[in-house]
Length: 191
View 1 (cartoon, rainbow, N blue to C red):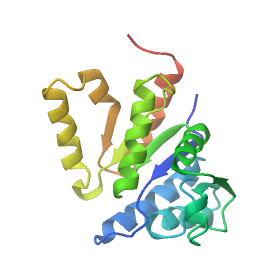
View 2: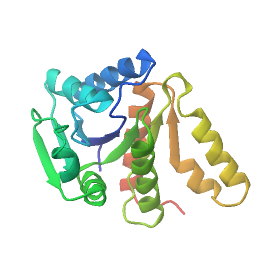
View 3: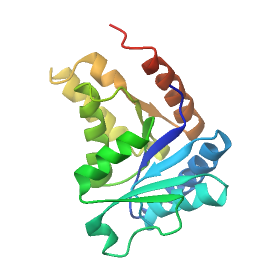
View 4: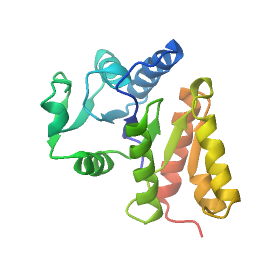
């Protein structure tokens, strides 16, 4: 399996630090240069809207998945390559997982954490073998990564499970790590 589509989890706000918007634009442009389609939550606000607009403006494809409750609040991005409408958040995450070859997290809040944790849990349960990475621009994800280290140290997570959570300091490293992990996942499990 190669990395043809990437689910990007990120905030529906821009955040206070402009480096996050800069990284979002850089990610979108790098994805298009590498021929990687965007799969994301389908919104037009915040980093979500920015990643979609960047990919589309660079000539790439952007596939959104939005639940009915958010579509009715007029936050759906109507200029996408394709916008999938689903009933709820559970269906959104399932559809995004179906459409994507891997996952990356830009800064975000509880929705981003929810998406990441479900992708990780589904991987642990064997529902998919797709890799996931935190794009740790400006150290945004360091506290979360440290918490995962604590969970492992306390015996609630194995070293192997913890190693699945890739952490990259920049866009190109994140994409390289995901390409490598995607290729390894297609070769089958390593015991």
